[in-house]
Image 1 (cartoon, rainbow, N blue to C red):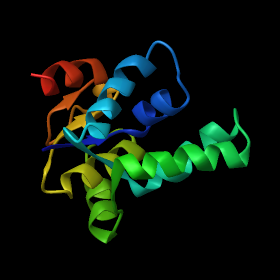
Image 2: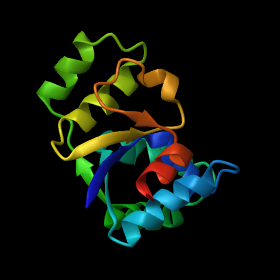
Image 3: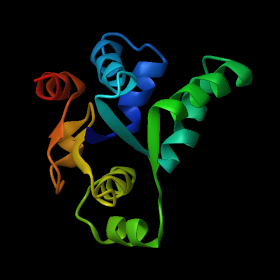
Image 4: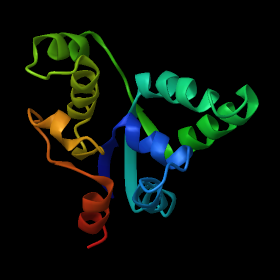
Length: 139
C-alpha cells in the first residue's frame, strides 16, 4: 500500500466540499477508504480543520467530520525534531515547513499532496496537486 501526506488545505477542501477542489480531494480519500492508500496528516491539521469547519458548522457536526477523518488517516506527530527542522529550513511559510517535516518524519511517505505546490518548492519529497496525485496513484 502506498503512503502519502496530505496538506491541510486539501483536507478542508474535501470535508467542506469546497468546489471545484473537493472532487479530486475526495478521490484521494476514496483510495484510502478502499485501502489502496495510507494517508498521513499532521497533528496540527486537526485544530486548523476544526477552526475552519466550525465557522460553517456547529461543534457537534465538526467533531463528527473530524472523527471520520481520524478513521481514514494516520497522524504524523510534531516533535522537537520537526520544529527544529522547520525553524532551520528555507521555507517561506513556517506552517508549510512544519507540514513538510511531518511528512519526511514518516519513512513510508513518498508524496506530499497539496493545492499550493508553489509553497513546497524546497520539499525533499515529490509534491503534487490532488488531481496530479490521483492520476499518478491510480495507475
